[in-house]
Image 1 (cartoon, helix red, strand yellow):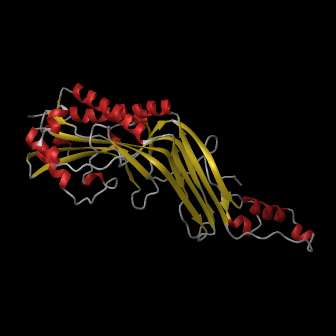
Image 2 (image 1 turned 180 degrees about the vertical axis):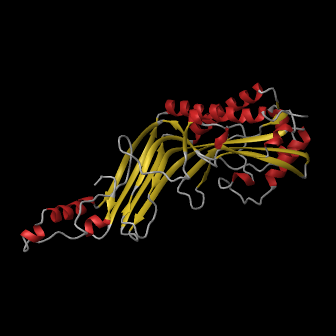
Image 3 (image 1 turned 120 degrees about the vertical axis):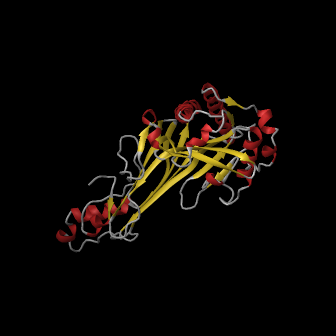
Length: 353
């Protein structure tokens, strides 16, 4: 039996078994669910994005970018169980070597790339003095940065920043990475006011990266096995990675659209995964299995048998320790590919005003 699987029936019925916790390096990870589709960065295309009201981009040749949201998953984890909880595995992983200052520096680099590519489309990109001098900008309610959020029913904890000189803005569509209710329309109305006053389309991109792709067998009542797997690296996070755009003719109301990443995108490595701790009863299980395999229960009936385990557990803690140079390279590769797709959508919706 593979060392990556723990099967309670192996213990109860005198077979050999071990519980699977982590897959990294040469070991194969547990199969991902159908919903967790993964594509390489070089294979990412428009089909991996859901487009909502892209025609809004054609409303004006003038574009204002008052903010850029850059996020990274700082903690991730996954658990699995089988046999009504008789087998349990749990894995947690933390991102190490990244702080708020580094994230703001990376946010500056990806924002600069976005603006450079935006100008290359031929659109007029409004300057900061014009943006910050608008009445709509003065009505914005920025989110304190760095913003940390663990979305409901999600194992990930995400840190979000903007470049140091830009406000971090949260609006309804930013949920679940938001610090306010989706029904809070304050910032949306302020952006509409900005668009109307400056006669422009307002764009706010959001780029969020994870350092691990996790998979597992889930929580099963009747299955005796449980396993989780981790694939370290850098990945674009679906849903959290998107681009919002707004246009309004009057400050009271306007229209908006989005480009939303639907699939996980593998970028490459930016460091090394290190297991920092493990707590399990593998030795107890193996002692029982060795006793059963030896037939000592039959040939030596008076021998004191080891305790028969009825619960299998394995808990693992890990760190993904980044290399700053590798991280910057991977982040910029992701940003350039993502921004290139956004520019393709902009070019496909030429401005009519």
